[in-house]
Length: 346
Ligand SMILES: Cc1ncc(COP(=O)(O)O)c(C=O)c1O
Image 1 (cartoon, rainbow, N blue to C red):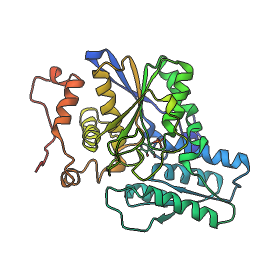
Image 2 (image 1 turned 135 degrees about the vertical axis):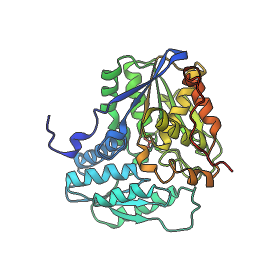
Image 3 (image 1 turned 45 degrees about the vertical axis):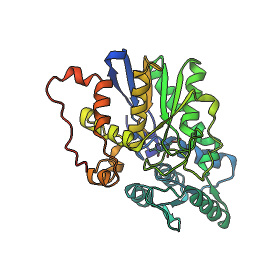
Image 4 (image 1 turned 90 degrees about the vertical axis):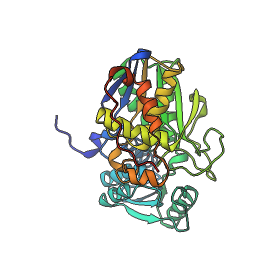
């Protein structure tokens, strides 16, 4: 089949199953990094633009403005090309430089927030304030405001339809939570189909979505940092369990999955896989467990997949590898010494 536009490449993503033999469970990874912008956010970004156009708030040739750590921005940059819009992306130093370069390549106008922020501090509050102000100043410009935009969660209806068609019965879903749009849209959709589906939302340790104390973290694009407010789009009623994952657990899991399976996943997905396996191992979930590969490791080659970067920030933790080996039954299947990557731990 020959497709006619890049947006036709959004969705219909494949699922890769990892078996967890001891628990007779399959961890089913929906490979959302296969979307044209490289992340799950292509779905909601296009949906927000279509909704704004349909409502008349936005006109073709108009301007959209958004604060984004990268992936939503890339999705919006794609939608802007498709609908002939100008896109102004407000970013901070926390976003992976490669994500910003992609937005720029797609024609986005990049604006950085000003101010002194620590490397591990997300300037999300200032980013949103600045995006709203820019939209206010330009006639006809629309601030997408993904955190409070219902079309964010509404952008995952196809994801749910696809997953049910691919898997059939889904016993549990594990996903990350940033704005909460993907979690809300997917969890609602899955529960509508099967009310017994257990949903687990994973946030970084240091994020405040589930009421824990806030502190800086390195996981990019996910969680709500201290000082920010949880988005209106997040519907807690569709989440059965909220869990926190440390940067080390998330990043080491991403590195482990790359070495063991050949699949490059981003840091937030590393966290989701770690918590999914932990929950499977402790018996909270089992059967067909769906999880999302929100984006790919290709976007984090200078951070998550750079040992020197991890070492400088004390993020290496070989114990995560032995834990994952145990959960995936690797220890039993390989009697030869396990092949761990060479780690330069201080
Ligand atoms: C890599 C990554 N993981 C997780 C999320 C969180 O998704 P959501 O905003 O739907 O909660 C995002 C959002 O941008 C992301 O880019």
